[in-house]
Each structure stands twice: as structure tokens, then as C-alpha cells.
Amino acid sequence: MSTADVDQFEARAQQAARSAHSSVRGIDMTGLAAPSRGASLRTPSRALLLAAACVVLLLVAGTLLTRNVFSHDEGVPAFQPQPLPGSQPFTPKLQPSVGYRIPAQHLASPDDPGLTVVKFDSIPAGGLVAMRVRSYANGDQPNLVSAVAADNRLKVLSQGSDHGRRRAGDQAGRHAGARHHGERLVLPRLRQPRASSSTRPGGPRSTCSTTRVPGTCSPEAPSVTRRSAKLQPIVDGAAATWHW
Amino acid sequence: MTDTGPVVVQIGETFETFYAREYRALVALTYVLSGSRSVAEDLAQDAMASTYRQWSRVSAMDSPTGYLRRTAANLAASAVRRRMAEAKALLRLSSQRTLLPEMDAPDEQFWAAVRRLPARQGQAIALRYVYDCSLAEVADAMQISEGAVKAHLFRGRQSISEALGLATDPTTAGEVAS
Image (tube, rainbow over the protein chains, first blue to last red):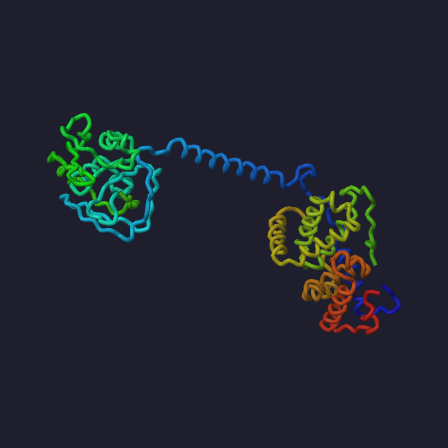
């Protein structure tokens, strides 16, 4: 910068700069506390990210493994679920009333655990309905099965729990051979009720009749009504029609 | 003016040497740009720490000092960072450290006028006069062209002259960065 033509501004600015330098002349030179160059500040965050990624991978792998190993529900035969065309009010004959609505556009997967398949003769367009018993208010599958069986319009064909699967095997499993021939859900006639097979644990003894196609289970024991008296209304359920 | 003329960083210079040479002038820069004696040192420390973290890259630059000055000027221009530095300084003031001595009133008045300028104009004037930098050095520090520096200096000079009632030589004003 030329000093020959220094104007007032230049003089003032230079004086101010000298003053600024003077004011810092006595400051300490200590105080810089920085981490060593070898220890990058980014290292911990990278390690954390890597650890988090590993945890997520493990969780995903574990979930997939668990799902494949443990949730394969063989108790429900393969079917093509289709959404119901609309809410289907259903008024059963049970006393007290057990009522629910099947939500529209809600598909159930055959792999869903805890799936109970019941037959609704009163639904003309439907046929079978797969219903998730978990949505039953008490989660009381035996009671539900009993309640369904007590209504001669309904039929329990299969259910997801081991307990229920065993019972379903009592009915549908007896004609396992037929399952592979397209009539797997049609219950055969039980000429003589047998306690070991047709008596449901905690439920009424039922026989299945083929007088209606497909057959329905008719309760014979009056204990059904006592048990159904404990039922709570089913307010929802994952459901899908199951075309016969 | 001062002993802080153009600096050529030697190849292989350690950060410690760089720090010792640059620190005081850097505090002067942050002082005039922040207007706070308590904040100036913290801003300079922050700029130094930022430079240190990237020293392997910065030391290989053509002008590490330009990087340092740019960092400090930007820190000082940021109101949010200034407030944070003020908060840190307030915590620190409870201990023993002494404040920088105050400047004379006219000088303080001049830098106050600089701080009222738009940030880039203030930075250009501070770099120009505190460091006695050439146009090219200011341009390098601010990462802008020399023409832009010239424009910033010219406008800043006009604003300050009007505010402080200083007479300016038009020829000097036009060649402010000659």
C-alpha cells in the first residue's frame, strides 16, 4: 500500500490496526487443547456406526430365521385369500350374543400364527373365513372354538395353536388324505362319536354331519351354552374369504 | 505497520511453530471482528483447533495462513458462534485470565464501524489492515477474486468514512488495494 497518498481513512485504519495488535501483545499463548493427530475425532463415530450396523444386521437375520423356523403353520392348508367385499355383520345364535364384523379388505395369510378357520354358511359369497383368534377379546381359543361349534352355521376346520391344531387334526386331519385332493376341508361323517377324537378338550362333544355340504359340527352337550356365556364379543378379526 | 506481513509457511513446518507465529495476530483479527475481548481468544482458539484437526491437509496448502484467517474471520462473522464463544468466555472469566487491554476510543470506534458493515466487507477491511495484506492475500484468505475484494474494500471504506466523517482521497479510494 502506498503511504504517499494516505488519506484520513487510511491513517485511521492503520492506527486502529496498530492498536488492535497492541491490545493482544500480552496475551497468553497457552490454551490450545486439541486431541493428538493420531486420534481422529471421527473414529468413535465410525465405530459406533459400524456397531449399530452389526446390531441391525443381527436383528434382521434373527427375525428372518425365527420367522422361517418357528412360524410355519402347517395346520392351515394353503388357500388363496381374498378380501371380503364389505363388512359382513354376523349375528350368531349363541346366547349371549357373540357378534363381530369382518373387516373388509383385510387379508389373512395362511402362515399367520393363531389362525382359526371357520365356516360361515350364512355368508353366501364367502364360504370359509380365516379368522385370527388373537383378535378375540379374551384370546380364549377353546372358548371361541366351542362357541363357533355351538352355532350350527359355523364350523371349525383348523386353528393355529398347537392345541387347536391337534383338535383340528381330530376333524380335518382324519381325512388328511382328502386334503390333497381338493376336498380337504370337507368333514367326513362321524358315525359314532369317539371321546378321543371328537370330544374337544374343555368343549362339547360334537359330531360332524355331511347332511349339509360342507358339513357342520353340531354341539351335543349343553355345556356349550355355559361356556359361551363367558364369551366376550369379538369386535374385529383379520379375515379373508376362503372359497370353497 | 506491524510485524505480521505476508507469511510463507515452510514445508514441513510443525503446527507448534505455526501456532506460535500466527496466534497473536489471529486474536487481533477476531478481536476487531467480534468486538469482544473475552470472545476473541476463544474464536482464535477455535480456528486454531479447526486448523490443527486438518493440519496434514492444511500444511500442504499454498497458504495455510489463508485457511486459518478465513476460518477465524468466518467464525467471528457468525453471530451464533460468537454467542457460543461468549458463553464459553463467561464461564472462563470466573477464573484468572486477564482481559485484553482496551483500545483507545477512536480505534474502538473505527472497528465498531467495521463490524456494522456487511460481513464480507468487514472481513476484507479487517484482513487488509490487521494483517496488512495485499489484495491477493485477502482474496486468497476469503476465497474470492481480487476484483471482489476491491469492491468490498471500496464499499466498506465509503461506508466507514461516511459514518465517521472521514475525508477520503478519491484516488486512494479507487486504488485502495494497489
